[in-house]
Image 1: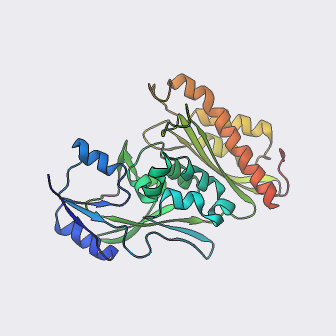
Image 2: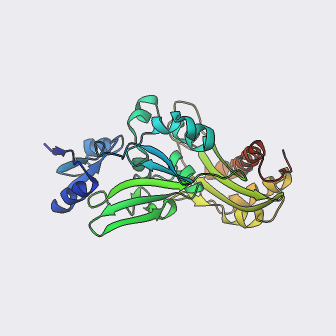
Image 3: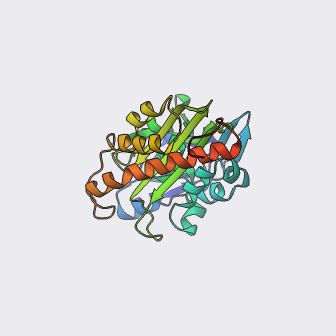
Length: 298
């Protein structure tokens, strides 16, 4: 089936094209997953609206303490960006973990989010960073938290037949804050992780102020380790505290048996160690920056 392929010059024009086609048009950016869906027939559309030539969507900016990633920024850009590697190394690491170099050169950060896969590495880390995504549609512009974008397994609340993702933003970690990304995979060539964890800690006066821990794939979307987060608040960041937090995190996980990723039993057994390691890395990063007034394991 032949399709029309268009390059709007602005986000507003892209939205206008989508709306005027009444559900028969769809946004394409990197297209690494969309093209497979079109080839298999699991996705149907008559018009592809390519947003990669819209000015600004391929830029990474640091403004007033905020990090802003244009929706068309690629995984390769994130993985190689000097300031991101220095200030938010966990995000650069998550982007570098995705697929092959060819895929990373094409796949975009918005696609990683809108595709709504529960173990999408960069999306998991962005959720741990407390990121939000700006979306423009017929009703105007709105900002949705990363956690709110998941409607169901592989389904996003962002409608690619009506709406255009514009940017993803989050606060740059402060000196007393640290973040980490930990990933377990069967082998380096495997694109999908067995487990991944994105975490962020805030430490003041030698005590943890708050923690944000995202675990995947242990449910229909990245899941918060709510019990571990609640426990960590107010505690000194020590090895024993992190180990106990890891055990509590597993209580919020709901993995299923998978031929690719292993059994639910195996992943529940391994998850506590990954969560604890992510917390250790957060604490070490804070200590390296001179924040947090000394961590108990540093």
